[in-house]
Image (cartoon, rainbow, N blue to C red; front, side, top):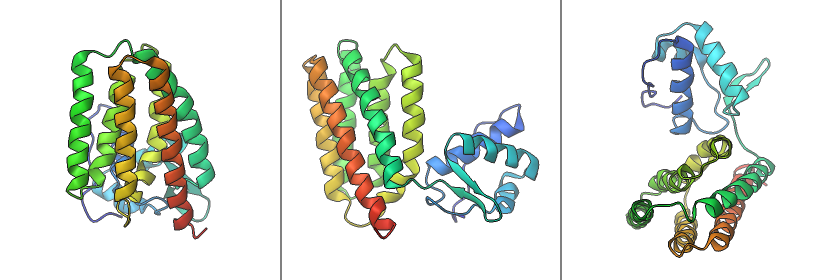
Length: 229
């Protein structure tokens, strides 16, 4: 259990919805390490709820891929294997490349300026040694691009896939030696933005696919090292 207080979602009229959203936010925010066993009694106590809504929240989060239940062992934050990462990022590359292709002619000048500002702030954070800020900047970069895609199902699918990897990515960035990988990722974002600024759909799609493939490779190497492979 993380020493800092767990985040609380906005109040909802349905208790189990509130518990689910709060616990999901805690996982995405890095309050638990990947593969960490959850002490459900402590979670219930901190959220001041009974085990009944908490069990239903755990069941929902398990179907979403955030949590793994192991009979006779407990409930754990999901930990992605290198194969899991490869599968997630392969699909992301296909879908987000298509998103980039579609939105190249739809992004407004204001949105493009916002993407440029995100990159500048990301570069400044990296230079200051704030590696965790890169995860938030990366999410904002990809979500801004996806927000202009007219296909709602495409956006929802990408968001779901991305959520599965966020906890592992946050955890990875507190490990030593991540600076070079972050600068590589930022440069790949800049390549994508250049293609968008030049209204080049095929190049934007190619740059996005290349970025996600390289991100997959970097994350697989890290997870393999953590597993002792």
